Length: 402
Ligand SMILES: [Zn+2]
Image (cartoon, rainbow, N blue to C red; front, side, top):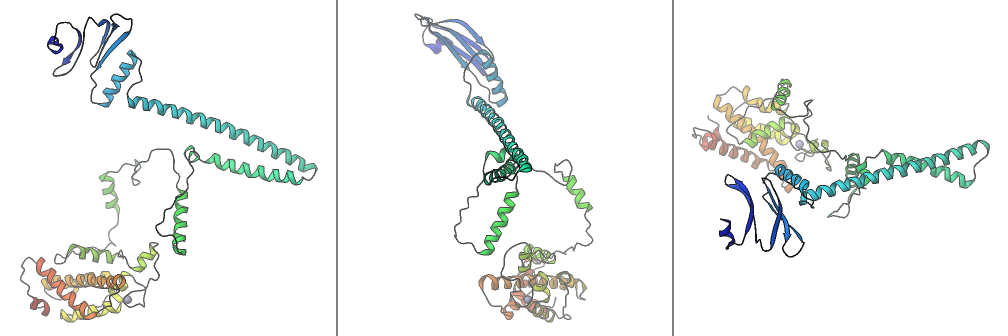
């Protein structure tokens, strides 16, 4: 078979047999040119060593069949390194370089420490000498200056020594690239706060890792999460009865409003966002909170009066967002109408918030008549498309004869 590869009979060869259908190594040569003197074989290596005929030049023909997996590759190179001397593959050379760098850093650290210790000793000697002199005479101007400098340098040295290797090796400068040049006083203050916080961050040479702080092991498990959830008292938490006639986003808005988790001016200011004022943008008279906006603002008052008149129920008065979201339960009407009223209340909350946003972000003035109309039509649209019987007509909805 080797002859068929070679093309004529003037050949010699050496081989490593294949394992199954893979592997197998074959070295072939012309015996008139190369004379083999020794060979080394293993599963992945075939080395044929000899001399070139007519000269004393030693020649090695090395044939390698490298495995795919990294650990196996590493083993192969270790084996090859034991048998032959050569530079090795790139990753090995890289590791060698890394080792070299580590040694250099170690040396540098050692030398720096030695220099620091020497400097500290000299400074302390200077101080001691000057202190002794002080007991017998007053210092000259030059000596006083040396005393101050020595004290200052000692303090700096101590401070420097306290830093770890990582922060000593690199000096951090914040290089900001602003698109806008001038910062106003509030922004400058916020930037300073940010820099102060960044300066407190200690970068260590250890490896970063995620930790689940709720468990001593630091490892997140579903069971530890379950334990925490089961241990949390839920009595005070309001459970919103979901209304399937309005979109999920509207239900979620109601739920968040009850928790005061909507982005009202007051909530934003509490979370450290700079706003010019925290007053309600609809009435411009009170602090804007979820409760004010949906319960006590004059716009909300008018909306709830309109809703109670439209639904033929006694006037709706609330003290909190929670009251608002529970109101439908206590109205003496059919189950279907209760659900409709809950959908209307949720839609109204959503529309009040939209009206507020349109005023804040687009400068659109508040139009109460349009707001009432929008609440009526939007709640009808949502209910009609989501109510499984799909039998509500616009006139039924307008008369609230459910
Ligand atoms: Zn208001």
